[in-house]
Every structure is written in structure tokens, then in C-alpha cells.
Length: 220
Image (cartoon, rainbow, N blue to C red; front, side, top):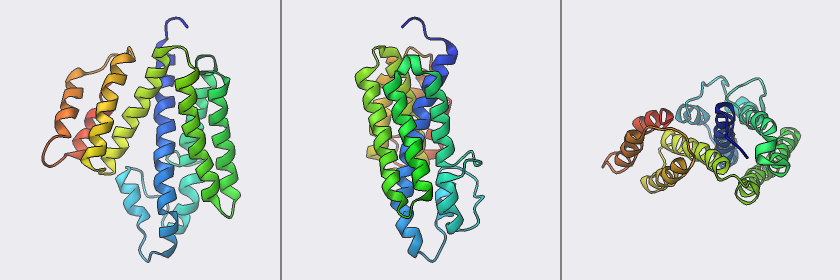
């Protein structure tokens, strides 16, 4: 393909970010689903604080149903998946119909989970479809720049979420190290000093997670 426009670059970046956001938050939600059934306290509020979304739920029962599926809530998993689809469908020519189809399948399975008595089964299929989407991005997209922009978005979002969640140093350091070469190859302009600062922050004896979020969000 030819020169990638600013609009295409932005859409590719956010396709990577939204698909990663769905993947990571859905995995977290799935792990906590059964625990929330038995707990006496409403730990969902801690989850909301960690990923910096407003607690508009009021109870764990409402959270369990609305956080994954509420189309009117911009912070829901479904809303993020829908935004990934909005970008993917506009980028059909850049990413190919097969990559787009896996985002479509993820939406299909999310809608099945909404009415299922065992929603975690369909949610696992959503996760599998996101993984398949990333695999197709690597295997079928000829443009290295397109691949690298999508993967840059993915890595930025993962570093952001891992920092918000207070993930262990080893994992966070690994993701920052994976972001650096990807953003270098993306062709996008970015603040190299912030990259060096991210590397330094993750090596500090006491990690300043809030500072990492701040720096990665203003990297581009």
C-alpha cells in the first residue's frame, strides 16, 4: 500500500488499543466472575478504581451484567469491542477481510454471552477471536508499517492497563521492552525521552505506576 494517512494511522493505532483493552479486561473479568458470586463484599469497586472507570453500578450483581454488555456505557467491554469493530470495518482494505471477520466473530460471541446461562464459555471464544485477529495481522497483512502501528497500539494499551492494575515488575518491564522496537518500526513520531523514562521508572525500587500511566499515555 502507499502512504498511510494521519486518519488511517490513528484508526490503526486505536484498533490495536481497543482490541487489547477487550482482551485484557475480559480476561480479568472472567477470572473474577465466579469469585464475585460468593464474596460478601463488593470487590468490583476496587476493579473500577484500578482501571480508572466510574462506578456506576451500585452492586456486584449489576456490575456482573452491565460491565461486559451495556452498549450505552462507554466503559463496558462491549463498547470497547464495538469501537474496535468501527475502526476495523473502515480499515478493511488495509487489514483484509479475514482480520475483520475475527472482530465480527468476537461481537457475535459477545452477544451470545449476553443471553447465555454460562457466559464464560462464549467470553472465552471472544478472547480466542481476538487472539486469532492478532495472528492474522501478523500472517496476512503485507505492510510492515500497518502491522507495526496496530501492534504499537496493542503494546501501549497493555503497558497502560498493566500499570493501572499494579502488575508485577517482571511483566511490566517485559511489555515496555516489547513496545520500544515496535514503536520504532511504526514510523510514528513519538517522544524518545518518555521511552527512556518508562525504562527507568520500571527499574526503580518502588515502581510509580501512576507515573508510568501518565508517560505512556502521552508517548505519541
